[in-house]
Amino acid sequence: MPALTGSARVEIPVRTENTRVRAGIVVAAEDGVPLATDVYRPREAPRPAVILRTYLGKAQHRPEALGWIENGFGCVVQDVRGRYDSGGTWVPFAHEREDGRTTAEWVSRQPWCDGRVVLTGGSYGAFTAWAAAVSGHPAICAVIASVPAMRPVDYSPGPDGGVLPLLGHVSWWLTHGDARCSRDGLAEAMLDAEPDLLGHLPVAELPTRLWASLPGWLAAATAGADAPPPIGDSELAALSVPSLHIGGWHDPFCGETLHQWATVGGAHEPRPPRGLVIGPWTHQVRGHVASQYGERDYGAASRFPLGGFQAAWLHSVLDNREAPADLPAFEAPHVFVTGENRWSVADPVAIRDRLIFHATSGTRLSTESASESGQCSFLYDPEDPFPARRTPIDERDISARVDVARFTTAPLPAACRWLGEARVILWASTDAPATDWVARILEVLPDGRSLYVAHGLVDAVRALFRRGEALRPDRPYQFEIPLSPMAITIPAGHRLQLEITSSAFPSYARNLASGEDRLFGHSPRQARQTVHWGPPLSTRLELPVSPLNVPDVGAAA
Image 1 (cartoon, rainbow, N blue to C red):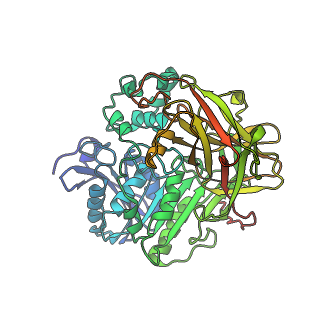
Image 2 (image 1 turned 60 degrees about the vertical axis):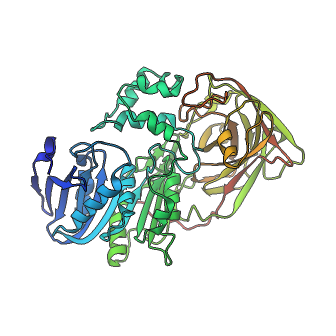
Image 3 (image 1 turned 90 degrees about the vertical axis):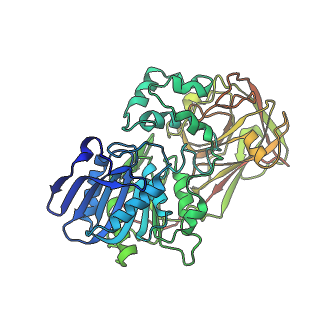
């Protein structure tokens, strides 16, 4: 077996009252590549074993591993191929099926394991869990996935429209890509020192300007959202094991979390047990503290006992144990409703009722459809793109920008609960050969503050090509723009605002409006953009709404 480099050459036994740890064990992949593995096993064995395969370094997960031990499980933490102490070359998403299956086989044969294996992980770790799960090893009996990142570029179902998430792609690759160890803080330092760096054209030249050698960056960027995902929906639907899905309303992968909740196990009748928890969290899921994001303070009720809930959920699905009285019920989906700042039992993908707000004359947004048709125009300049905002902070500083069409409701006469994925049906035209359409929803407070709620965007040429059409200048087309999912109650007296613009930079790579590829083009042009309303071109916002009298879950810890 090939030797490992660094600290993984030796095994370091560590004993605590309830735990025996062996660090630096080598598990050989199918092709002989050594995978560095730390084993945390309880003194009372055999037990089910939780596997966590990570690209962040095994030591980062020590507290988590010890928590599993305290809750009656063994735990195995492994560096994925090419990262930290594991051998081989780091190629994201390339080897996780076979390496995960090999690890599950090895763990299931250990004397301290009772033959049952649970897969867990967050972000890329969630992908490693699903990849091993669809490999079909019979020892795998459950999956717990948090904030899942499932593609080589962080496209997510719905709101990104297949447009390259430029800032996220640069930041992730600069921190983790093409390297054995992460370069923590490098992306932030680079962008602080060179704040205009992401504005360089062509975008394809950025790797020569970034503060690290990233030979894989451009290939991943050009793969596009149309490339087949590493794990198909049919594979997820065919899984017959219980699954727990954890996400955050402010996480860019929230749509993926809900998509997996709706998909996993769907080919089976009866369906395997499922659980769902969506909190007011970002990509950093922190259920043990009160959450605050931007100018939204969610209070003490936002805490959720995630650690205990996961362990108790596993005991329930594996051993038929009942939920402890101090934890939320396992069989219900639990979502935190912002605005109300409480946990509720509701399924965000099952909402069927929609409240429709129509764009009308005078830049109004109304539940009554426009009686007459109309339009408004603005100038899109790719060299002065509309800025991206995904944090709920007061946006009055950009309210004077004129490269946007705004439609605003009157103060709402009653509170409105939005739960799930909203959409904008947009009728729009451009005089350019190519453009993007960006929809943003804001909550306008009585004191004048405007706070971001959700967004979505669509590449017009790409969207029309999919349905067999071509973009013609100055001709209006209908576009459906899915918005990032949300659970929020807009109080009476507040207003909703729909913004239509053509960029969200630097979160997304700009459309140059010239017809050039957004990665390789270098000649932007201005575009006259027009939004249409009224019969028969009804631009509108469609909100999934649910009753306000859903009982509290009582999940605060």
